[in-house]
Length: 316
Image (cartoon, rainbow, N blue to C red):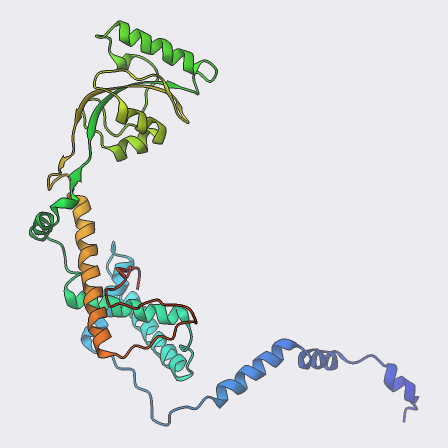
């Protein structure tokens, strides 16, 4: 029998198993895991079995949603299987989360549910139905006051780039303007530097938005004040110097259907969605009793006119 001194029991190094257990039981992560397991076990569970049942239409909808993610290729058998498996898994997770009241006071969940209701209202009102030319033309006739063109101009330009003339660009532009005035038949396109940003080429009508986008605010304001066929003084911009002439100008006019068709599609769809949201809000406000307790001194009024917002559809 070994004779071991008492102090040897105290100072002897612990085995690796002892050290590992000691570290484990003092680790905060273990405390967290144990606490989570206890909390999970304490959540009341229903005695009746849970059933997840998908009918044929639901299966088709799941596959259609999956196909929208990759529309360029058909779904394989594996794709279909994975889509169904993920849906079922999501459904199980959702039900467990609802059972645990994890949706309560969660703004992300709340916003998503609101969004889904808005989608539902749009679909019921036909706001998500395909847009036809007949619909658009009727909408165009109904909202003609929106589709009035501002004053439009046709432009010629001589441009002096500050890349080519960083130091003498202004002087070069002044000389070119004098040359144009002295020689009215001179072709402006043969002078200066090519300027590719112009959306409205010579002979085409330019709208104020086009001019502002092409040249900037300073140049756009100068063009508004130019008389027809008068060459402007050089106007400096971030890219260089511009000498401009308005060759023709026409006052505001009613736009044609073809000119605004692309914009009509967007506005028509937005108007349908806004109308669907307004109808839903008015209907629900009559079905529910709404009580709002404002802070002291506040007099905000809640109306049933709606906010004009619409739900943005993205990937499912």
